[in-house]
Image 1 (tube, rainbow, N blue to C red):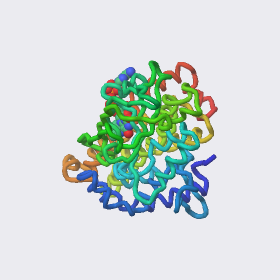
Image 2 (image 1 turned 120 degrees about the horizontal axis):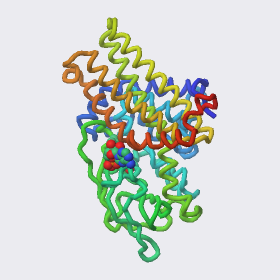
Image 3 (image 1 turned 45 degrees about the vertical axis):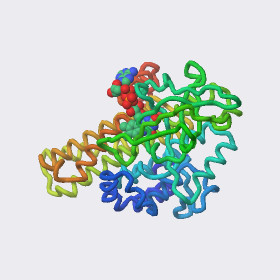
Image 4 (image 1 turned 30 degrees about the vertical axis):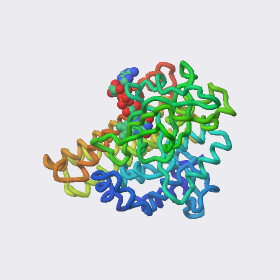
Length: 393
Ligand SMILES: Cc1cc2nc3c(=O)[nH]c(=O)nc-3n(C[C@H](O)[C@H](O)[C@H](O)COP(=O)(O)OP(=O)(O)OC[C@H]3O[C@@H](n4cnc5c(N)ncnc54)[C@H](O)[C@@H]3O)c2cc1C
């Protein structure tokens, strides 16, 4: 199991930190024009993102540092990587090609043939963007009520419905669509879909922050789906497909997303320190307090990610640390705006961008209200607080 302080994780962190240098200026360009990512595809940061969660044997040049090979199958290593890239620029990181969340779903649900075909495509020398299509209009938080239908059609199926706020869908080559084959949560399936299939249409939704992720609206108009595109259809029972893949992906990814928030917080606070090295009195204390909170969330997140690696998937704790990190990202940008002076948001393009980007984290992978519901369930069951009793995460 990976631990935060091992030489292996330290080597990875050092490498990714180096790759993140210079991403802020590019991030500002991507904020102005999210398609600008196409000009930066040779950067080491893009190489790192493209290879995340792909087994090394598929890649011509897997990520190797100081004799260690990384494929981000470790949640902790993935979290550290995303935190450091987000310290460079979170929106840039999310604009990159690669498996991002779809790879985790295919890894969790796909059979050997499906995984092999997916990894081969992702390992191609040309950049491949993917998407993870769960949210629907009016069915964001209530994802189990999704209405996109998968109806029988001869020896295959037809997929019809709408998806919203799906990262990179308008630029993706393929992605996972969650849909309904039968009523109820166990009737949900995950389908691996090529975006050039007739009936698939996606367009970018204009947004204020985190513009690199190019959230898109998808329309699915009787899209043909073969049985072999349904993840795990031949090898898993219905109760071990679809919904369980969405849950496993979100739980595996929340510490990674929390890493995005932590990286952004660190960037903002370091920026304030660099801009105002002579801060003193209350202002200095408030900055130090914010730094302490970020460090606490960061360490907690590493503990949660390490627990995921050890197979201890605790929905309440994963949700708790994500909520705290999303709130902290907003608070850090507000504090920075206060400490840098009233005109900072207008005059400092980086702060203006971080301020907008931070607000997206609240919604990504479930809002604070939904995470708090998971925390309260843990409190009611008595599992959330047993950390205080020394059992750890
Ligand atoms: C930058 C970004 C990237 C995203 N990427 C993806 C992606 O790649 N794939 C994807 O599928 N989705 C993606 N999303 C969508 C995201 O998952 C949804 O925005 C989120 O789940 C909330 O859904 P919603 O926007 O429909 O809000 P709603 O569910 O309509 O919620 C609106 C408000 O009501 C509150 N609320 C809702 N239900 C309850 C309840 N039961 N109890 C208390 N309060 C409640 C919420 O907390 C929120 O404040 C992305 C969103 C963003 C902002």
